Image 1 (tube, rainbow, N blue to C red):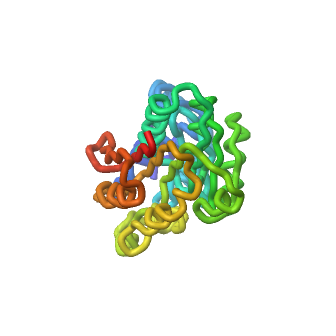
Image 2 (cartoon, rainbow, N blue to C red):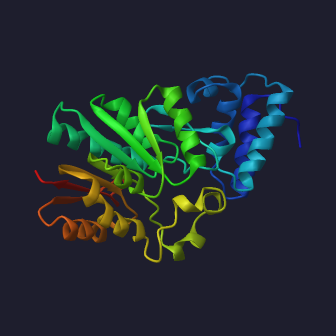
Length: 288
């Protein structure tokens, strides 16, 4: 192989290798941006620039890591979410763009329902902290707490909260258990729980199923186990007038909406499609 000395040569090599292995060719750009500490525009303006040999070596190693299935976000150690950079590792699910739409939906509805009043919010299954931290930073009237069953995930989320300057209270525990035990009540419950049916796990990309935490993915035989458990627990923590917001898997919008309607018969329940036209969010306005 001809030695790589230029930016464009590195990108061409990466693109070819990734294409051969059926991986996303854009990963080459992401990795080289990371190693050169550039954004994409700067990278494209530097295509003819020389590369240091040590940068080429590290870049090539990382491309090969991704080809084995390691998510690029775990290789570079971060992902962008709602305009902010969140540190991630193998202990947390990588934040997805669809979840930004869930956050946006909560912010808009909270403004309509609660105005500028102080509002208590709990994010269940925090992972990297992307939802909780974003809500805390986007609406300073939010008093945000968050729960995760894994101490390793909470450690990541706490570091993100400190680095981004967000005030969030962290609880370790199963779903809403810590709030129920502590007698804590909230106005808003938001969650992106595990919702992939057991039988679908093997159909996922190796990048997901072999590297992201399974505890953050699997939701039982039909993917709805956690939503059913929420129906028992949410009434114990929600203040009389409240908002429930869930991310759901494709095809789960109506089943989850039905669960909420059964639990809260007078609630205004809405299934919302994401930008790709797939049912992705369910919101329930209760007591208004």
